[in-house]
Image 1 (spheres, rainbow, N blue to C red):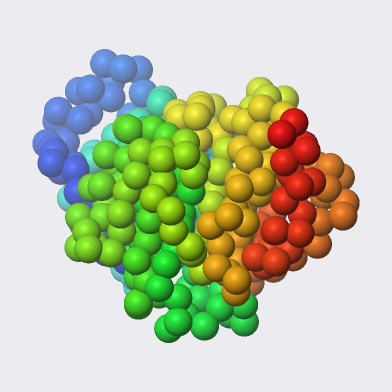
Image 2: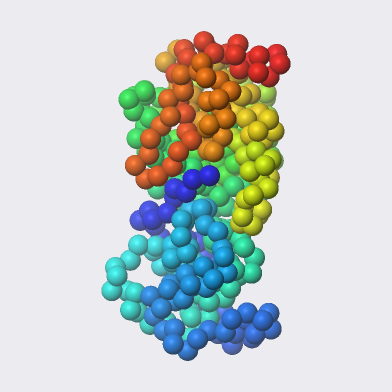
Length: 341
């Protein structure tokens, strides 16, 4: 489960209605909850980021939902609390905070430690392919490395300006569908999810980006309730975590909807279902792109005859394959047989 979205040139990661409540109220709650009091020595942005990172490491927090380390997680939360851009000049690290600001930042740090919720669930904001998205615990936090290839238009396999139909399966927050609509100027995007709750979040993000005419949401179990269409690009980040792997995930992942992570048959059930049907929905020159994460090794072991192209990433990540339409169709019977069809 790779991390991608961090460090875009973005504005403050969300707004909290009471983020700068009085220091007296925050400190009173901190003491009542038995949490760490704010050391008087903490005065600057840099002080608080360093202190927050130290607290996170001491508490044994896990990262991977948009940040990869304690320092970046602390910076995300500080910028949210202070309505700052994530990127700012190093000179600002020496800027001093007011008492209320210090209290608000520290309260958010303590909430991160006490709840074990990823920062994106506390700020209700995540970034993907250079775009901001609303998120809450109805959807996974956007973090697929696939964003990098969406930004590239999946060249050389596709000519971006010629793509007019895209399908995103298991859309969740809608981040992949919306990113495709943003980066393929002429494309209409259909996006499906089996979860009505997830589709409500996706709908909110479609409206946020003013893409109601370009991104169409369907409640569907993969292809089941889709209109008959042909797509030049089918893309998916489906559930692919095996039961064994699920048991070993850190607490932070327990806040995400299990339906978006867990898949039967050693993490491959949904992946193979998509592979078995995608050929019927691809144009002759279309491609299928799917993230399978740590299930890559199992997928290759189960289907050694399939010519998967495993995409490489400049910004980190792995476990994303690409198949051309002809390759999908050639192997369709193999996938169907694996499903017992």
